[in-house]
Image (tube, rainbow, N blue to C red; front, side, top):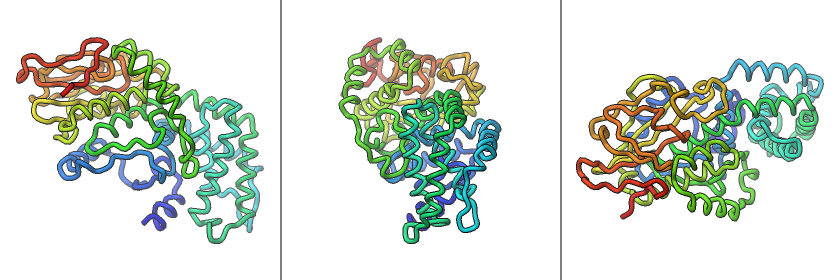
Length: 407
């Protein structure tokens, strides 16, 4: 399977590299994706509650955060395809002829552009030299794995040299560097919100979450050996210590959302979510309840509850955030973004008192949850509840106190 599909056929497929991944089906339908996701997760909750939930491993061609940048491009197809067309025309003279065919070929050239954007969009001038070398190494490996113009068993030095030269010239081009900076300014924040939503889902859907080394902060990595680099655990420990000491309140949430690039916002989600899982393992091995009905901008939200007995956790995540925010870089929070969007709550979840694990805010919605309230100050929401109708004195977090229930 690995040699025939994941390490050969998928390396030949490049229309959108973020779908070209270990375990993925690039040809799978996208229409009705959320409904099919819910259906699959419901089955997983019943039959495979202890299956591994991984989004980045040593085998992935691109880390999950890297893929998020490419996913955002799918929300702006006209801009992206126009940019690629301009690049192909502008860089025509840099291609060579090897064995009577151009090098790089069209598929390899397109993969070069996607890879450059995935790890280089928004990078400063000093960082782009390192990005160039990582792109060169990855494209060389991709070409050999695909085994179309070169391979591990029968490498073609002339083709590989032509591709290396193309990448070198590309990154020396100031117009191309300027385009990367401009594109980074456009997709940078939406990609982070997309990646943060995926982080929430990974940690809360049925299954046992696996956090790859260093993935507690943003990691824009490519395939092995790029994804096996050293991890600065001392920095992560220091950032985590600061978050643990900070009061869980809306002010902290807004501060993290205002400056997401340093990665603390992702670390906050990982820490608080795993703490809740540790305190309520029965809930995260319990039922999976999709929240699919409602009104407003439902195409831009994924929500579900995990329940066990009288206790429940409710996850709310945005999707297609570029279109949701109409290109604005701000976080997908509040009524300006979500307007009147609301999620219908089943009777077992309605009328409860909920506490936000990330912000300390509390809500008591009736039969519907306004997404503007669920995501009032933070881009993703994880709400915890014990049924107040069964427990007259539920433990509810005070501002500044941990909302994680204690045994």
